[in-house]
Image 1 (cartoon, rainbow, N blue to C red):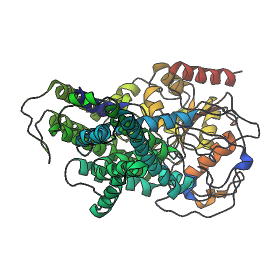
Image 2 (cartoon, rainbow, N blue to C red):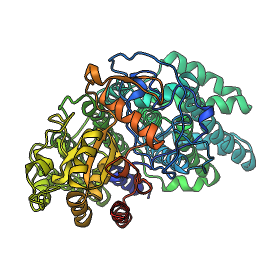
Image 3 (spheres, rainbow, N blue to C red):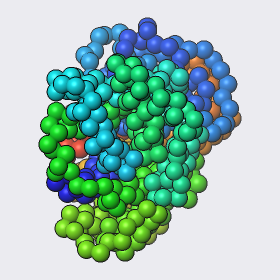
Image 4 (cartoon, rainbow, N blue to C red):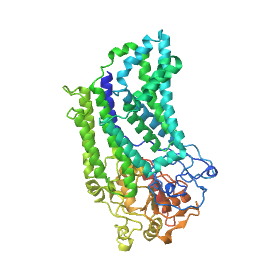
Length: 594
């Protein structure tokens, strides 16, 4: 039964990547209590560029961020990657008290669930699973009585939880809240995360093992013989050390994922889920020793679990590299390149599950079990699902993970959507000066391309100027190159025929990238009246506009304004409810034409 369950876990893990990103978290505080390390502090370039996908409940909050004037430098730490994970000091809040937002609990729940899945996967590793009968034997035979054995098992499980949660808390204490946010926002950290997870993946694939010094492990093991609470604690500690070669890569990925969320409690919550999932099976088998008879014998299937996790970590590592690639416009991991890597990785994964590939530690697959067959079908089906994306298929289930579709060189899907769509003013026939596509767009580069054939402006003032000529409202789209939920909105909501028609025919679209690294001309640079900081980059300019005018720094964030820049209706944040978005656009038109 456990063997079948383990193969099912492989299937679940294989398709986890198609799940949407965890819900974004938002926290709000009064402006008077804010300090310098906000996501838009404008203290330096590190905090000036923000990528967020948060959902904001209060659309019209305003406020101030206190700070002092400072210079900025071009460095690898000047780009931030977040998914709406706003720290305690990151929301610009009005003087009016706003209600609590529930994004943070959802994000922490996501980390906790990921920890539980990782813990169950770790239990099935070759370094832990074979130790179960020996450990249970200690509780049943050496504890004297059954009651004492159950008590020792409970304490053993509790100490496992304490040890791993302490590890998560240690990460937080060492780095601190601001450093955790920097880890989530720094290009250096994203590159480091990529390399760390890549090493873990290679380890799981059998190239080498990550182990702790044997002298240290032996000393801890000796202390486990003391008996009593101290002995049980060191017994649990010995399990953590001995199994590090198997659990290390899983723990490492969980901590990296938790840190990338920028949440203060993330590492501890992740380790709590991991340790509970790891400890509970030991306690269950200690409570009901007869279940040990039904456990399948250790064998090559344990190494299959390990190698499977190696394939998954190898694929997930490239997401961190993609973040840096998008922000710095390297053009290395365009959408089709990213997809090609994933198709090859998961294709090889499926072939491996069929027994056609063997790694170090694998035994020969003479007979293919039904569970292994279904796991291979799941992985290979996922691989086939991605293949149309090479020609531009939206792959909406993966939109949160993939680079934007606009980075794709050959896109049949984009052509099919935009082929029959008119430009903003093509129906008017009032001359080229009223055709948005004939206008030279300020700040536009080769990388700027609105999705689905839409035509967008990339400068707020230029969009307002054109809107006056055509007498249309402006949809201000605060977005970012690595904004995950921005891509999800563009792939899930904007292609809707009604939404696309409204954007094409009734609005002037202004896409303002808050992470744009284009330097402003010397004459355009200024000191923000809102924050008092030097604004030197295009992204800083739009971040300053969003914070000062609309009181938030979360992306995506949609604001409808008239030709004078006056907001017409409450703004919208991330919400894939298409009818709601249509109502938002239609209500803006109604207010504009009053």
